[in-house]
Length: 323
Image (cartoon, rainbow, N blue to C red):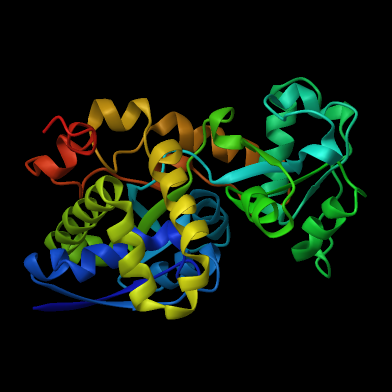
């Protein structure tokens, strides 16, 4: 068995359920891998740890990959896990006054982001909709960035920017109808990726291929059996039992809305679409998030996706039940 480490981007949650299911069902073991999961401290940390060879593989958002590369490190994205960002604009119906269904409805509103990266994505969303100058998009206050939901509850802002299910959580907790606008449905940039160091990938290509095959099996199994995926997650962290419904909705939103793109259907699980990377780099370059120039095509590769593995090449058919 080959022992490797997998640096998560955050503490266990619904977005990570497929990896826990893959381990529980022995998919990594079947590939000759013993995988130790490490709880995360954010995507930038996971990307940097992978680039430094402090972990074998990291789970990191694409924007973090580019940001860390701009700092002189070289995390390499070897699989695109979700083709869309999990960022979302959310609101409460009694605050917003109508169902939120299109970006254009945000004109004339105040929309408060919870983090710098989500603010950047929201700004690009508004720019594409032609209403950036008509929306008050405050800068993130580092002392209160986790409290934008309270401002929304009090009606101080019209909407907030966070990730999918943030609105649903408010709805469940306060019995007030919420609406969410998935930024990824309107802005074609990547969400989560699996990263490693170029040196490790070059030295141990079969280890990376094995990890990706097993992970794809985990995503396929979780997508077709979400209840089992959340069971595996909760067995890893029993404190999530009380959030079981929210974590399942979080995963199912990811599996339904974030992972399925035309690129995945055409080329298979994990394959990269260069245009999404270029679009993301262009958005980040207009802000101070990048500390230097970045060539987006250097940030990713499809070289370690096994073209003979049907779980990758026929992934879309498998999760739809056609294969």
